[in-house]
Length: 251
Length: 200
Image 1: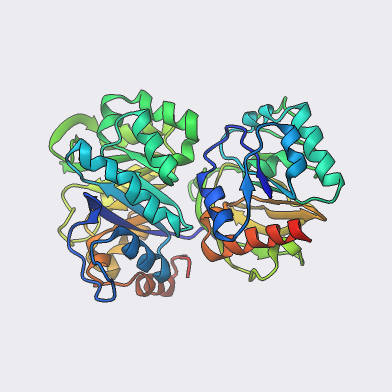
Image 2: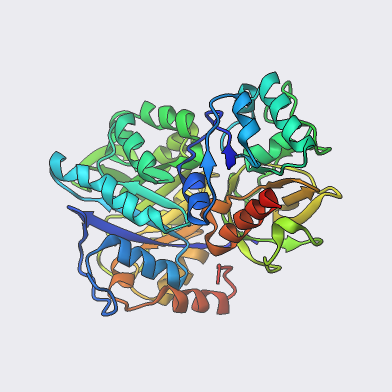
């Protein structure tokens, strides 16, 4: 049976993981490769490196970060943040990323989805959608949630699929950072509208939230960052919790 | 030396890295002539079956020659499909035909999403050297929409809506539907088994 995936996100700036990390066993708490190793040992199913670097100079360090993480990791690795051109994707994939995640660039230039899917296969192309609830609809935002894209999330997810996206990484802007739980209505609305897998993100605060998003939210995978960084929840204990509730996981 | 065939169907970085990690010497042959150097051949690949069109007469001849000499061949994902007679994904294009059967698309439903993406369980069907040391119900990482049928050569099956061949092996010819280079320790073990076959 296909397992529900648990994905850890590393927000990386200038080669260091930000958002605070307090694993005492790590030599350098902010080192992405160390953190990746730790998650891998705990049984994480996939990793996402999200580059939040502001400058072009610092962005060159991203390839080194990807290489360092990919060197000893044999699980899928996605790289996102600032991928705007085929050349950006080439750099990430050549450095060892298996998938790239497109967000703002996919909205402004949807043909990029198709170009990358043709070049690397759909399995290598994630479209990240940041959405906010407006009444009973969900509106898409670009530029890290700063700019309304004037798109409906469900409709945009369908379009992304038809243009060649292999998965949707769906983040609730309302829930991001709140630890109030995933936005299950948003996730279910998108997940039932497309046939490609949907990764739910934003709001993970406890074990029950993951159960909810895999049942009510119909998610295929769930992504979290700080809940794992702060070791509030270990990946292994989360997976045991899910298994005990009848949700298939890789243990 | 393990020859990793590049026919422009996906990126080879991960496979190359995994093989290097387990201590194998890997090279990407420029043309079929270079296959003479190979102790084992891996045909990787993701994407559309149509991409196998690039593996034309000279490549097929070179690969079959090495197999005839007892060198092992491993097809990964699309590379595994190519070992069969063909695939519904590109019905006009024949496969290598070393294994009998036609690859077909997995049917989707409300509960079953296609592509099949993620970690799924291997159900071992029989002993096979490619699966040496791999436990029944071990999980590996899949990403695909088309599958190879269950045949007498199926060494392990997986299920997504319906059962399909996850691992096939007949003597020195093997194929895996999942990505061993992305399947943690289980995947590395399978690659190590292949490299061992190449050195026997």
